[in-house]
Image 1 (cartoon, one colour):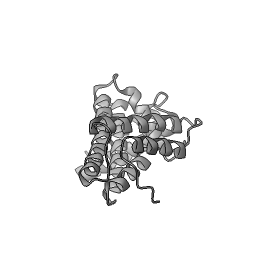
Image 2: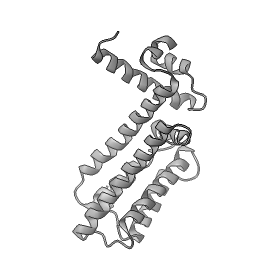
Image 3: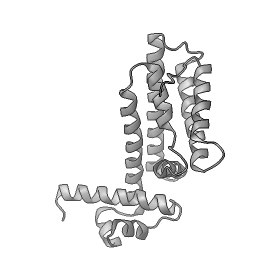
Length: 201
């Protein structure tokens, strides 16, 4: 049996391979063999660390969420003032473009919610993190006087999450909505809600 430190590293490598393979093949077509080939190991080696493909995907889903959520929270925390934090939260809540493989994959994982309790839990957790970040920024802005909110914080935060998710799906689908379009539209919604963004680059 692999030593704990080695086992942790191997599991992390499998998760990375699963994310890359899923980004290439799509979740619906992904097989254990695809993940094994991406990781450069046999199917049997994967099954030493994981019970089945779904167990790998659950951990890959969690890892993808952590990367996206932690990165955005860190960037927001580096800003001073609620308006600047809101601008950064919106910018980094959207995909970087149609080729943002990790964001596209997270949207694909949403499809598994309702079919797998574990995936459903992860989707709800990510939603809670999105909502919590916006609530915190809005509350800070209201307390400091930067924002004059026209509505309940919870409702405005829910709208931000709904907008970034909806526009994000259009962006990764390669439709007519660009990242710039989405940022501009969400910024308009923010201003209408009494939470104008700090537009400094």
